Each structure stands twice: as structure tokens, then as C-alpha cells.
Image 1 (tube, rainbow, N blue to C red):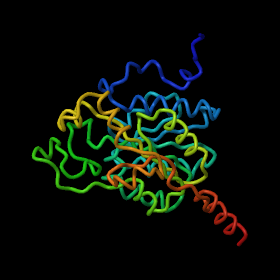
Image 2: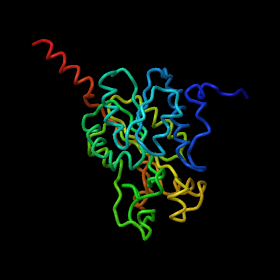
Image 3: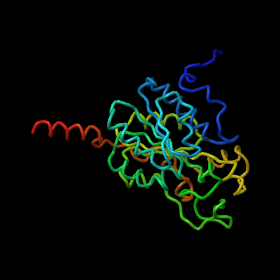
Image 4: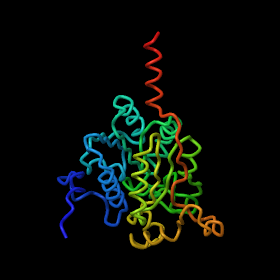
Length: 270
């Protein structure tokens, strides 16, 4: 069996080994991303990755794309500027659940509302892993964290429902335990002409798993298989607590950059 070096062409190998903790799910997301890009056959010079701050945002340092590492929660704002200035580029924004839906929540809903052709990967590990395991907007009631030693009383966002309500035209969810589906959904999100959101459940055994006594990385991966079902599964009807996986929204609406070009064309005629 010959070594597949084509995937490695998309990586900055000089920055390995990576900084993620042993057992972190974000490396699986990186794997799914580069395999999706390879299968789509996209020239890496036509890709731009824009990230904020957090464990998830470190992905931008490991891919050999054009990359922009910005401030916490503002990645989508920077990505909007990149996309408007160079609409032909494929813009991908990896974010953590806090980066996307806490300080970055306003940028998230307005990027969805505009339907700008950007792919947002929301890596949901339900904690702020880089800064000590504080609660995130996705932690949920009853979860223990460094900022909630006696358990959180805050309800969590539903990323899929939030993206859908804000107007995103492609919305999907999967987990790092479903690696084939992960790559396929990223491929479809990149290929979609509009704002795309893929929520990815990713384990953090160092903080979230340890504080909530969920076991190690393997135990958390098994839990993802037990707590999720394919979209439309009969099991969901009998157990509403289960999370569905798959594509929730896939529709065509006017894309923001293309609509903006029409505004420019009208202005030039005056």
C-alpha cells in the first residue's frame, strides 16, 4: 500500500506536532477538512481560512491555505471583508462554540442573515478549552465547569436552530465519531452558494470530560454515537433528548456578493 501524500500537501507539516491535548476531537475535524478539500479538487491557493481565538481556531495554523488569524469572536467579520474583496475565493471559518455563539454571536447571525458565501465550521466541545474549562453557550444545565463548580443553570443554544432562524441556507450537524459523514458534510457546505454552517460535536476530555466524569476520549466518542441519530430517525420520536445528525437546511437564495455586484452595476449606469 502506497502512502497517500496528497492530503499532506494541504498541511503545514513544519508546525506539527499540534498543540491539541491527547484525545481532543479537533484533530479529527482537521482530518475531515483536508480530505474534503482534496476530494473537491480545490486549488489551495483559492482557499482562505479565517479563524478567531481558541483551540478550534488553531486549525488555521496547520493547513497550507491562505490564512488569517484574528481576534476572539470576530472571524466572521474579517471573513466577510475577505469574501467581498475577492468573491472568487473559498472562505472557511473554523470556530469554537464560544467563539461562534458567545462573543461572536452577533457576527454569526448577521453573516447568516446576509447569506454570504462562507463556510462556518462550529466545533462544539461545550467548553472554553484553551482558557481553563469555563462554561460556554453550549455547556447546558447541570454541566460542571471551572466557572460552574456546582453545575451550570444556563440553558444552551441549539446551534442548528439558531442558524436556521437567522437565515443560513445550508445547516448541518455531525460528530467527530462519524468521520465519513463529517467529510461529506464539509464538502457539501463548501460547495453550497450561500452561508453554510456545520456544527460538529467534538470531545474535550481534558476539561469537559474530566470535570463531568465522562471518561476518556474513547468514552466520549462512544457517547456521541449513543446520543445522536440520523435526521428523521424513529428513535428521536421516542427520545427527544437525542440529537439528530444530517442536513437540516439546504436551499438556494440570492448570495450576498452576487447581489452586491448588481448594486454596483446599477450604480455605474447612473
